[in-house]
Structure formats: C-alpha cells, structure tokens
Image (cartoon, rainbow, N blue to C red; front, side):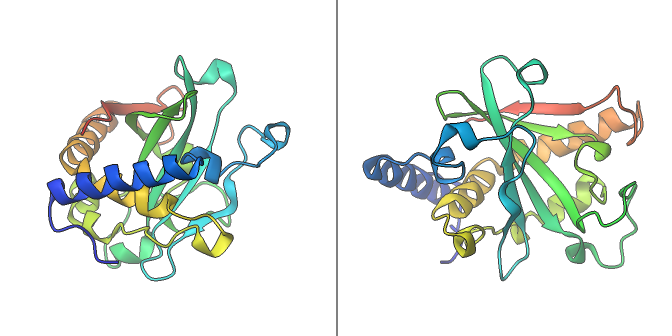
Length: 206
C-alpha cells in the first residue's frame, strides 16, 4: 500500500487503523506479545528475530526493561530501524562493539504505557541498540525509506508494521527534532557512555 501523501493523510489512516484494531478486540501490543502473559519475558525481542519489511528491510521489535529501569507507568517500547544499506558510502559515527550485530541504524523508540497507549518517543545512545550510529541529518534525509508496512506479516503479526510506519510519518517533525536533540546531547558525551542512555525525548502527539 502506498505511503500517505501528507501528515493529515497519515493521521487519518492511523486513526482508522487504530479503530479497526479496537473493533477486532486486539490492541497493538496484544498482536506482538505472547497470548499467555506468563510467557512474556523482559529484554526479549518480540517477535523473535525482529520484524523486517521484505521490500525496504526497515525493521522493528518490541521489548520491555525491568520495572526499575522503565519510565513511570511504562510497559515497553518499539525500536524502529533503517537498514545500514540505506547509508552506503557514509561512514558511521560509531559501530557495534559486539560481533554479529544487526546491520541497522536506529531511528527512535516509541514507548507505550500499561494501558497499551503510546506516550512518547525516545532517542537512545548508540550502545543501547548496538547500531551503526549515523548523524541526525543523514537519518532525517532517509526517513522516507522507513516503510515497515509489511514487517511482521511474515510472522503472522498483522497491522503493527503499518501502524508504526504511519506513526513515524505522522510525527515526522517531532522525529526530526528528536534526532537533532540527540546529536546535541551526543556532543556532550560519547556513544559508549553507559551513564548516558536516553539522549532525547518528545511526547507522542498527533
């Protein structure tokens, strides 16, 4: 399905899709997590192996930190990524410290509360996701490539990839500001500084 032509169109489709999922009785997070809450594990990626769009290779996964490491009222968050291949010819500011890390560039994470509602966007430091860190302007220039509409469908997870794509496009201005703020914070610390985890945040607002 083509991407919306503008922000208003993205918001309209996002609202319609949210209403459709509500009518089905399965909220966004419920489509991702195990049906049995007892099987849900902190730190694990949902779905296993991440959800990757077959065309764009953009991807997402959902996970949660232990309660003492979450924001108040937070359940967990979706991490959104572009493929490293979208940045061919551009040297990353920093790369993963561990071998076998996914070849991805982090865009942002979207946090959800315990009621299953989106609350705010965050930009994390490079060590958090072991990404190939790229400067804000390079990520912003490639946001149109962040189409995850089909990501998750191969694992039987419907609508989630499209919803996240629409949210990203509807909040484009906030994402650009978030990444710019992230780079400003990075200038005062370093990509491997374990004391600096969340570098910037913006409310989820339509």
